[in-house]
Image (cartoon, rainbow, N blue to C red; front, side, top):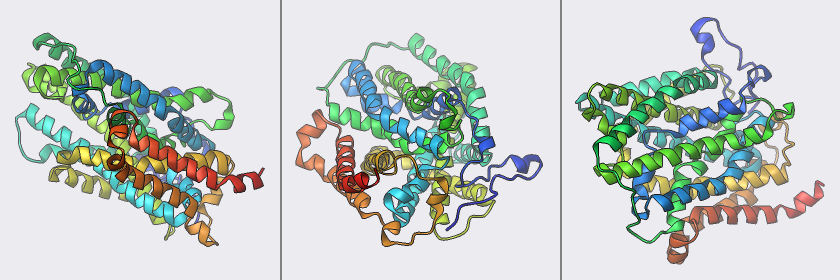
Length: 449
């Protein structure tokens, strides 16, 4: 294992625009993203054609309580998302490279493999939604649109964060127009009323659904973007960089969740994009909006999936310059296959599994980076070959994570009323993992003061 060197050197022409930085530290001349640009990246990444689904999942709780639950979910996720965002500015590496010091190199390898498949699942889920909507709009059947959308997304990700940011910025207005047309048609052609509560509010269930669908599912990825941002020592707008990911993610969830809930109430289907076939001429524009929404969010699923896979590969082999684009194409193909095989039919179970794993993983990492490493580990240290068993497996972190995972899986059965109606189970178990790890590290922390 060694730190990638010279991975940012480019060929001329179009090949020179393909991102090959891999998992190495982002060169200083590429760290130029502002907080405003980062906000747009996360706003567009979260504004998926699948995002209105939150309105259907929480429909029986009514619009007012759903909005409040989204706000509470943002308050829960704003600190970890902000700390991960700052992590990428402090040391320009993806989160799973930093996880080598938290969980050990072998532990980070296992998480990298796992999250590669998690992001592939998200890619497949969103591609499935796009394929179904575009089939309906164009009155086609089969998997042709699945392959078209999958190919476009993979090609875009080949060009990396620089061009992804351009794409998000310059297509954001078009996306807003397209979904504005769909919302206008919904409110002008259907009987729309404020969705009221049909069941008592279960705050634990509602917040669990939201955070695993959005902010805490994205949190560990924020450093993958912020490593391209202006370095933290520049003195430029720390608060803006801290808040940009969480505000962008949750603003999209709030707006599109409301639209999805109203669509569910008025049409019986959360997917407002399915109104496209009924809109003369404008149906085509609706289709463009759906395609953009999918490409926006799936770029931020495929891109981290590629980087996660490279972290795993780098554990045992020396990185090569073109492994990033090759991994992107392979994972894009496999994720599209998942969409065709019907991952959309398993969305609720998929969301539950994500929360069980990602949240305790994230919370333990936050404690380690802020309190144990004290944000001082140099980038080169994450590429040093382990010389001790603890370098391969950091058992305090792994045991704390496993305790949180076990509580996530079985805690709902032990205290069903508490975690359904009052507290979000994955968040509580993530906090338990973080506290256990923090207490375990008290002697070590004191010795380094």
